[in-house]
Image 1: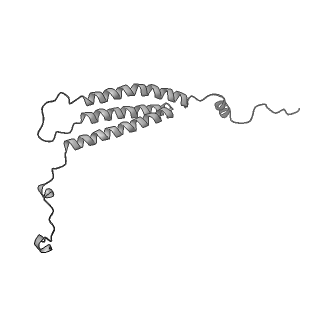
Image 2 (image 1 turned 180 degrees about the vertical axis):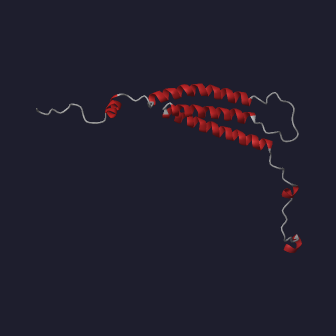
Image 3 (image 1 turned 90 degrees about the vertical axis):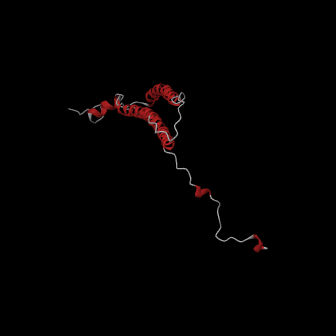
Length: 153
């Protein structure tokens, strides 16, 4: 009885099956880009609305305080919440295997975090101003050697 070779290449059955079927466990660049664009179009109006509301908060106040105002935590908390929301979307994209969309969300989260830290620093300086300089700093400088003008000639 003659031996006839099999037309199939040797290998594990799971390896052959995985190579023929497309993998759905990993998102491709086009799908990640489309999802990222959709989420970005949702996030931009939210960010614009957030900046608009926070910038118009103090317009109606007429009462002026004589001392340093207390630190205003509202803009910091709102911007921090927006940053955490963007980070949550980025983690969800990583879990659903869309690395390109997650990378875009991480860049947006980094910019939002930078903006949040900038607002925090501004509020910190506004609530805790540097002390006023003392009068000794403005005294005219005197040299240790004073010569009368008559002696110089």
